[in-house]
Length: 325
Image (cartoon, rainbow, N blue to C red):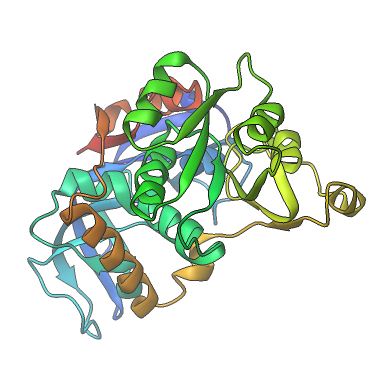
């Protein structure tokens, strides 16, 4: 028997249960992975709370991890027992000792990158890859706005943007987080607890605003995001940390300067094994070259997943958090 975290009903962290379970044998195109480290992400709380619907209840939790292949299906061709692998997408159930996934959802993990680093960076790092390199392909020289710059995604974005020659303005919730974002490459920070974000963006850009805003916070920051985008600018909504944005008024987009809005997902960009491995290889290359440093700032035992999610939702974490089986 193995251990996993599951929930039988939607609710707060208290609905998470640490239970025994029997891992399934992999199907023809599946791989069974012995997890060595598991990533903690806001999307995990969306499924638990009911904002996103899991396929069924009871449901496993989590979609990010790294470990060693312990069994493969009869039709698997890309992996063998003993391979080091990482993953950043479903099915749900990464909060476990052992996880069974489709072969297409796994990537090869270089020896130079630890399991903890991979588990702490896969979902966040692939998110930053598609945001900065595909959703709006930054060329260098731009000034951009990135909300929650001291979070797991934000700290990676600060570093990646700097490596591209981009000036990143990051929003934060405290002076300590402002210093953290700057230490990771943010060009400037705005403390939204007492500063007007849109006004500060206007000042920092000499009235030009920014060509692209990256908003993973959602409801609380959406008005400032629209007010910070330059005419014909793009507002990228990629998360709902403060709650979902309640609709998009097309008339407001016109009034704010013919703005564009998009709601991208990793699944659209990493839509096959080749694209996923290509994105992961770029991410791993940024890490091994020293351009990206992954901060594993919190570690919890798998059994303490509820506590870890509580801290994440309360915004008392920085960088990446991993669970250890």
